[in-house]
Length: 120
Length: 120
DNA sequence: TCTAGTGTTCTATCCAACTAATACACTAGT
DNA sequence: ACTAGTGTATTAGTTGGATAGAACACTAGA
Image (cartoon, rainbow over all chains, first blue to last red):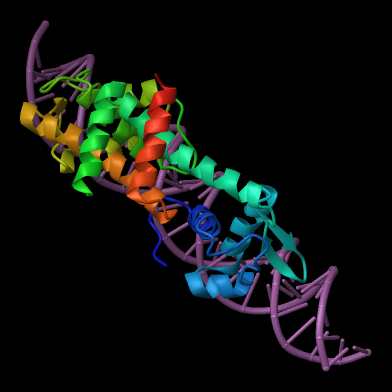
């Protein structure tokens, strides 16, 4: 996995795991790879993975069990809420940043339609 | 000015100046505050401002003149292109991130409409 | 020519993120 | 009991961003 500069790796790992969960590649209740395996896969240090998983545990997105492993929270509703939260979060950041450029709601709407058309 | 953690301050200063230019609060050809004044205004170190301005200069968004000051590039077309580039950039990041959550173009469109409605 | 205002450079220090290597603590199966 | 696999913690070292303070280099006007 390739990481962007200027954004802490442990945050990018969190995002990666969010994605795996929301897309159901890591289903509710599923066991995550061990911190050591993840570190190998992502070519980062164990401590960096540890930090990411630890925060995900604090957020109740995964359940971290000493000696057993880490597991996606086994609750479809929580996962659904997470997905919605991530989606709205992305849209809000975009909207707020465009607002800072003095774009009106109508202008934002216009640019969005244009962009989506280009993806047709 | 308040800065976010996890994002280098000099990058946030760049974004801030982008905004000032694109919104015409800093018109083409206008003189920017000195690095020392900017550092005071933003409550950061001179060197941090220096780094931001230096990069903006490399990008030809401003013209940095030793002994005179820094000036917004005096070319309406360049400013216009900058604005478009920033807008498309914001939208692209949002779109790509939502795609990573396995959302289809139609789903993205749906969530966007919903969000914009809520801002009516 | 002097001076105030500007950008530029340098040295030193601090801190968070990251790495490396190792050890510790717990769990489950044999 | 032992062992393999797991999360957790510690100590040490590197790097990039940010700070502080000072000096240098250039410009324009008095």
